[in-house]
Length: 248
Ligand code: PEP
Image 1 (spheres, rainbow, N blue to C red):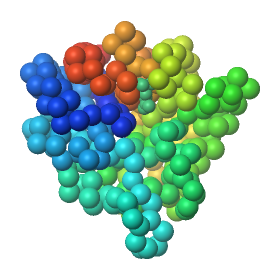
Image 2: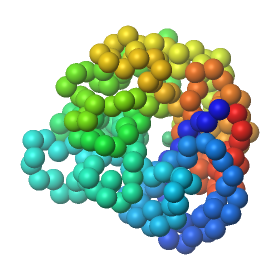
Image 3: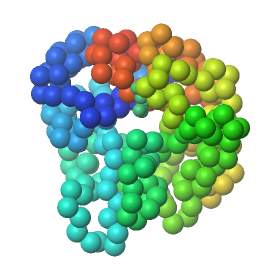
């Protein structure tokens, strides 16, 4: 079954890194999965030159929410991402959420995502997990996704949520596979019951947090898992290509 395999490069990369990476990646990629790479904004155009019809997709790691047409130094709009070959945008990654000061919630970016497919990141902290608050935290974050005023100008035909427990990001720890399935099912049910027009079949849920070649097959084969979002391991061209090539 076709899965989404997404690479979040965060603040990593250089022109030399990209050349070496794509020398390997393009030579060894034999995948039917949907691959998305989220490089730093400065390198999006560089990666776009390696794109063929269907080999991989591009996305931005974050988008600026600009209040009511005011100008914003350092702002990036959805049109700019699209102009540079992107069709996806990450919204609300846990490493970005905390930085929002003006215009509050990360989810406000949903207002301006236009034709970009949003991947909406949610996840509980270690404390929330310890205190049994995982589902309450996720509901709070998902409320933004389901709020009427937060729809993109173009209504989405589908929603992609990335479930990324904060305690699993970059730590080498992952939830038990059954727990991943349980939470993914919970997310699909919550969104389909609270979103006014999206049905369960329109909601995809990716898992993110310490995905590697060692655990990717098990995670991708789990029920209710539509794909993975990979940070650290996606920087190793060989490891990432092998994950992309997995057959599920
Ligand atoms: C991430 O930050 O989106 C992520 C999944 O990181 P890692 O794979 O390194 O845990």
